[in-house]
Amino acid sequence: MFFSRKTAPVAWIAVFLGNPGSRYENTRHNAGYMAAEAAGDAAGVRINRSKFNALTSVAGIGGEGVFLMKPQTYMNLSGTPVSQAMRFYKVPLSNVIVISDDVSMPTGKLRVRRQGSAGGHNGLKDIIAKCGGEDFPRIKIGVGAPPSEYRELADWVLSKLSGEDLKKISEAASRAAKALETIVTKGIDIAMSEFN
Image 1 (cartoon, rainbow, N blue to C red):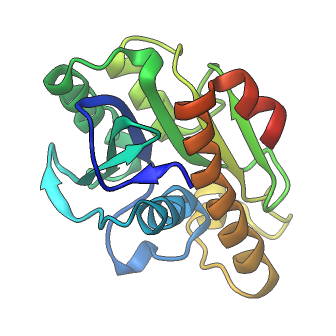
Image 2 (image 1 turned 180 degrees about the vertical axis):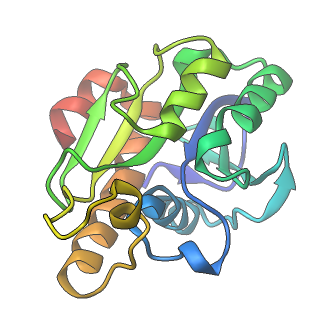
């Protein structure tokens, strides 16, 4: 593992998207929060310090200081805490890594991207709107497309995970934490070739 207890000044921000509260635990939309737990475990830190309306911690990854954050503003307003952290730490958008769920990918699949549109994801949409554009790396965790009985996408992404889906997404969340490490230590190109 590249994680270490010694932390350099913050040079990166890792944003794990989800919704706060027990109502949203283990839902598809909280795949980013699941990755936060995996990243915190790997780094030996607890992401529990309240700052910028987010639960946060600072981890050392390969000698780099990484600000880990779980916005507590609900998904649709994720951009506000991220923009505040960027200004405070003077971190450029290119060093903001966002980890989120993605309904356009099969359950448990992982995809690392250098940049891109929001793809209909409201958390990404708000970050793009408030933080200066689309040019930031993201790690997407596939949560599967809604079955036909789900009329509303919101009902699907906010539904509780169980069984095989929970297992697959939990495993993908752990891989997402490793992909985060790889982006910071080896660069986005190597991360894309290793995890896509």
